[in-house]
Length: 365
Image 1 (spheres, one colour):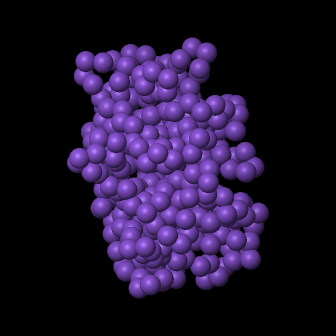
Image 2 (cartoon, one colour):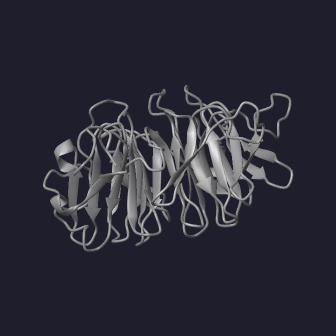
């Protein structure tokens, strides 16, 4: 198959014998077209319980299933009310039943049942306070109990957290309230994460917005939140309120990624204090990020491969791979660092699949 420069989904083979400390020994591959289907700008990646990979293709407004050899594309069909919705897919999630949850930029939420090839639609209804508060779905999480959490965020950075009752199709909304410090922080929901203790965390903030946002810990007994926000006089607070990345690694370290030069943090969940991980040009110690190119530059993802190496995505500036055992960071910021890659090093999404691969999607091509 011919490789096209417009394919921006980059595959890193993260097996133990390949992912060594030297960056030239890594093998990055662009996923080629198969079965007449090619990939372009990928907004989200997920793997279902059967091992299929699913991609949200922004340019083609489609959902793509990949089994490693063949791709199948799902698109909107104007004469089929049970087909994929019309619009840009922003996020994906898979649940234990094998269903795929799909969040759209302007078309709400879908549940896709692969066994029947049908899509169930959930939309905002201005007359129903138990519907989605907006049709711009920015984040989805299926937690360990099977609950479906949905975050909304529009282009000006407003949005809510929702909990779906799958029996009724109704949503419980959690909205920011300016005068209530136990509510969700403002800025729109950018990421929803569940740690290994079953605690739900919500990151808010729009990188191109007014700087509002924060990290939120959900307290289910009271339906309230504990807010963690930037404090200019407290160097153990978040360095910026725009939170897009949350990740707990294999050793229990809790990482938070925000906007700005000091955007990588280690959080002590017992004390609520943050260690801001600074840029370290000697590539020793903790994995700081290179200086930002723009005030809107931010950490887009934090993921871990099968060798327990961290991968940290930078919106304008490639990706960092960190080996916690050797304390070495390897920075991939130029196309010469990627074998068979495109020139687009604006990192957007990452996903660690069950076979030990790291899937990386870039932003602009």
